[in-house]
Image (cartoon, rainbow, N blue to C red; front, side, top):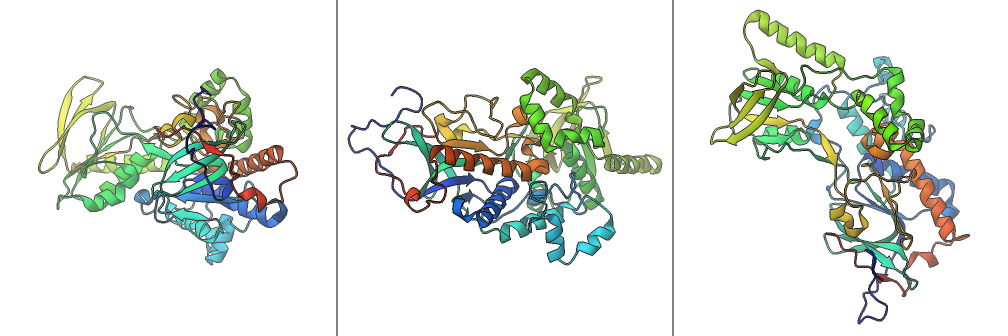
Length: 462
C-alpha cells in the first residue's frame, strides 16, 4: 500500500504483532472535558450493563488539577454553575455542582449567596471532588507520546496503539484527544523566571528571585490580564503595575442573554451546518463574549483605583493603551522591556522585576501526538460528532475535545458545553461500535483481545 497510512506488509520479516487488551475508548488527557466523558461512561455502564464501554484515560500530571496557577483569591467563574460536568446532559446526575454542594454541606449557604458564579477555588474543588468519585481507570503521571494505526488482515486500520513514555502500550478502537491548549508566547518574549505566561502565575511569583518587587508589566487586555493586574497591585503595595495592551482601553465582556446563546448546545448544530464563511462571520462578531474582554465590574474597580491614585498623586497603576512591547532584555537584577506607544510612535524602556504574559492560548498541535494520522495544518474539518475525518481504509476513530472552534463554535475549549459534548461523543462511540460489530454490544470477553492478524502501521509520530 502506498498511502500515508501504509502498513507493514503481511509477508515482511518479523512483523510486529500486538497482543493484549483492546479498549473501546482511550482518553488522552484528563482535564474537565474528559472527566465529563468519564462520568458519562460510568452512568451509561450503570444504566446499560449489557452494552458497557471499556475505557481508560491517561493524564501526564500526577493528580487532577485545573489551572492551579490562576486560582486567585476571590476570582469568580465566568460561566454559570449549571454549566458543570453533567447538568445539561443529565440533570439528575449525582455529579452535579448541586450534589457537590450538598455533600460539602454548603447547599443552603450557596443558595443564600444568591449567585450563579462560584469562585474558581470552589469550582476547582468541585472538579477534584468529581475526579475523586468517578470509577474511571485514570492513569495519572503517564504521558502519551504517540498514537499509531494497527491494521487487520484486510489492510484496514481498525485499531490504534497508544504509546506511553514509560514504554507501555494499550490498544483502542477509538481515542479521545483532550490535551487542552498551549500558551501563546509573543515573538519578543523568552520564558524565564522573570518572563512567564499567566497560566502558572502564582507558582512563578513564588520563584521570583528579587526580594523586593518594584515594578511589574502585564501584557494583554483580557480577563486574566486584568485579574493579574489587580492581584499584583493589591498584594505588592510598594510596586508599580503597568498594564500594556494594544487596545485603547479594556473592553467589557458581552454576557447579555441573547449574546450568550452562542454558547448554547443548539448553537453547535447551527454553526456546524452553516457555511465556513458565515460561521466565521458570526464567530468574529461574537468574539466579545470570550476573547480580550473583561468583566465590567473588574473594569470599574481598576478604573476607580487608577482615579484615586491620580487624585492623591501617588501613582502605582498605569494603563499603557494602544501600546506593545517590541523587545526585552534580561539583566542580573531584572528585565527591561521596550514599550512602543502606537499612537505617537514613541518608545519607553521599563525596568521590571517581572513581565506576565496574559497573551492567551492556542490549540495544541496534533501532529506530535498523532503523526501522519493528524491533518496537515490547522483543523478545518471535523464531523459533527467531533470525529476527525479519516481515509476510507482507516476504520478506527479519533475524537477531539477542543481545537474545533472553526467547525463547532466558541464552546470548543470552554466548560460551557462540556457535559453535552461528552454525551454526544459517547453516543457516537456506541453507535459506531454497533455499526462495526452488529449484535456484539454485550459480548465483552471475546472482543477485548487483539486477534493475531493485526499489524502495526508505520504512522509513527513526527
